Amino acid sequence: MIEAILNFMFPPHCPLCGAYVEEKGSWCPQCLIKALQPQRLPLPVPVQVVIDNAWALSVYRGGTQDLIRGLKYHGRRNSLPYICTLLDQAAENPAVAAVLSSVSLAVPVPLYREKEKRRGFNQTELIFRDWLQDRGIPMQKALQRIRATRPMYQLSAEERQHNLQGAFRVTEDTVLAGKRILLVDDIMTTGATLYACARELRQSGAVSVTALVLASDHR
Image (cartoon, rainbow, N blue to C red):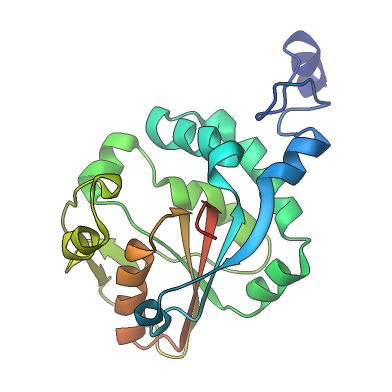
């Protein structure tokens, strides 16, 4: 009843076009189709050594960019209901369902501890944790970022690799031998961060690593 009253007093809008929708978290059908485009992402040959395949659930620019940036940089958790709707719709895609059925454990890309303390959360965990748990996939903080890194958008491909060298390690007492890992992150650009994380997971015994990101423009 409270939700119905709030929806009446503050009519919810589609996060992309601003049109009125029935309830908070809903998209208009056209915008949901535009944003939700699950696709397998191409990976460079060196990355294929440690990542078996990579998937993005939505397009970033012109799709989920504002939602992700609002959550990530401004702490706008009101983005989460819209993201949850998108995730639930993505799970109905047969290819996405097959990916989820092929893994045994989810691992989020970690933030450096000081950055996570300032932000108050790891946005990747907020985005994926409950959604994956509802589908029987536990999430474990199996990786830690052991040093601060420069913002990746400022760097060339070579600089990104150097920036991430030695930045991640598997947490103590974590057992990954025989595990089929789903490595999750909010966005993928070049894949350098996912590669650095997946390499650590594979070196610790993971038998496979599949990357899943909420959004990417890399096609």
